[in-house]
Amino acid sequence: MIVIRKYRNILFDFDGTLADTRQGIIRTVQGTLEHMGLPQADPKAVAATIGLPLTECFLRATATPANRVDEAAAIYREIFPDLAMDHISLFPHVLHTLSQLEQQGVTMAIVSSRHHMSLDPLVTQLGVVDYIPLSRVYGEDEGLRPKPAPDLALKILHDLDLKSQDSLVVGDTIYDLQMGAAAGCATCGVTYGNQSASQLLAAAPDHLIDDIASLLRL
Image 1: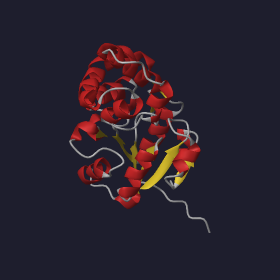
Image 2: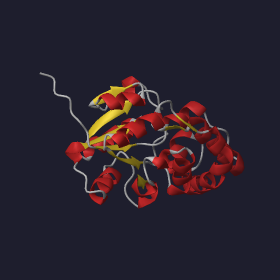
Image 3: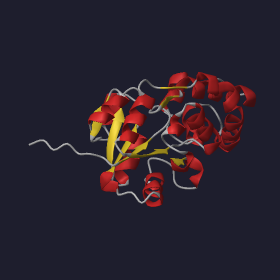
């Protein structure tokens, strides 16, 4: 007999899972490099680092010297609203899915590598806040180790008094899935974000979906 597991809680990644932020991120990285007098980056290389802290992005995907990555991250955050906000949108079926999950009594939260400076306005502007209040939005500036460490997920579980065995982490990168598994949660990879199905399968997710609406069947 096949047992369908019902999840009471879902922790969502943001970039590449709820919102298509790729073009906004690439535009802002290139703008940062131009501001610093550095060569432009390969857009594919930048996209491959989405989900990691900004400093890691500049280290791995650009020619930014290691002693200037903090400067690059600060410039990025300053110019992001002007360069990126108009180039970010939700993926199909996101708001409908969140609405249905809310009606089913699922507790939802966001666990992101993005700082609150940009995360909170995006969650608000895109209407996600109607289903996931800012009090359940967690970003990199919580002062904890970033993904794939489990710290952010564990903090959410602790703060909201949620059980890991009842919780599902949904994300578009192996960093999200590794974080969720390390926190004792089930994991679900989405294939429409920044990493392919084959990349996600390397992290052995419990589920793999092509459309966020498929969460309603879990």
